[in-house]
Amino acid sequence: MFQAAVLAISLGLAAPAGPACACTCLPPDPADQVDEADVIFVGRVERVVRVGQAGGRPISATVFRIERSLKGDVGTWTAVRHQSGDSSLCGMQFDRDREHVVFARRAEGRLYAQACSRDWLPLERYEAELIKLQTR
Image (cartoon, rainbow, N blue to C red; front, side, top):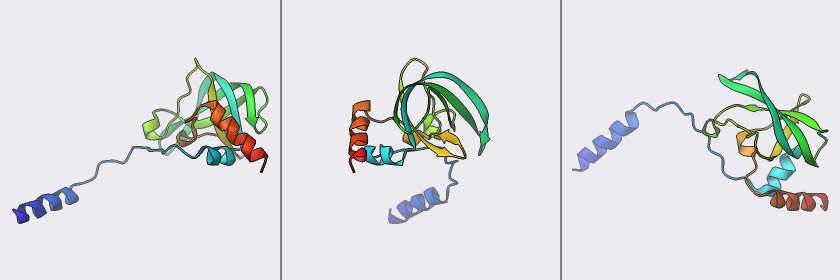
């Protein structure tokens, strides 16, 4: 019996692994999320444009009409680049029919967002963290 169990475990360990495609994000601490973002805003999607590929995955730029700027300077319109598609593959999709709280970082003059930086909590929670950050 013991030998059969060892053999079964050994065969399981020797089996080839499938491709790793999952993207798992634990909800970040809201204080860290607010602190690490260069720009935070509430906006509505105006359009999405595919701008290229990285690592075989599509990259899009989503253009937002800014309704409220919470941190950083974004003007009245801004584009945020992100990996397109399913969040299980680290992609992001922004719905046209609702407001989004967007957390983005600046690099090379552009704004970038990633699946793990999406809005996990109600806006009020992030606003409270911004107030704490400003009073430090």
